Image (cartoon, rainbow, N blue to C red):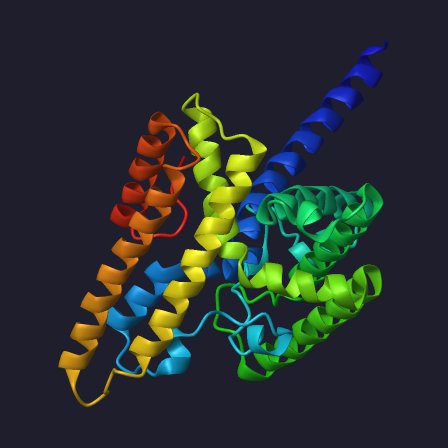
Length: 310
């Protein structure tokens, strides 16, 4: 290899390295942004507690479980773009990068991997074949990427209301398109099960996090134990959600004492729910597994979030 060729190769490697570094940073930021809605759902009951504590207004709707209706999802303002909308050290926005087929393909692979982790046990729950599973996750990844492409570049400034409204309309249309594609793929019966899964997704993620923690502690759950724990947690979650809705009806905006009472009651019911999960777990887990699960639930409560760090 001649010196000129070697220099060209070296320069090319340096350029590629710079682009890859920028892309990796953007991927980290973008994943956090694109999954912000899901992470909010994962706040679970802890999020309802914070609503009780922080909100100056409260009614039953504020305490209700998050809706899976695409229109309801889009009532909030779209998530903010990266600072300036540009990759660090570059003048290229995400929208411009997504015009590159190679970059888009790489982002889809990254999103696909993230999305699969966000839907534990989905293929088994819906009875999907390998091909159907691949198509479903491809639809979800394409939607998320399309939403990223529509995020406004604001240079750190607040998004204009008209721009935000337009982005909201586009994102709502993308979610409608996703819904139609999934219904065509799954059929009406399995699509209904998909919607049911979405209502319990936060609990399933929490159960999956507990299972991961147990595996990392050297006492992994088998498939029966994992399914049983997940089913138990879903049942407890549904009961707790009913309690939350009922408590919302007891809060009188003009009487702060009612908010305090509702909060205290909710804390007690959350503790009871956690204990019910542990009592049930003792019937199909070893003592060591139950103790680790107990610690994980305690860490969850101490951190004030729904999914503990394994």
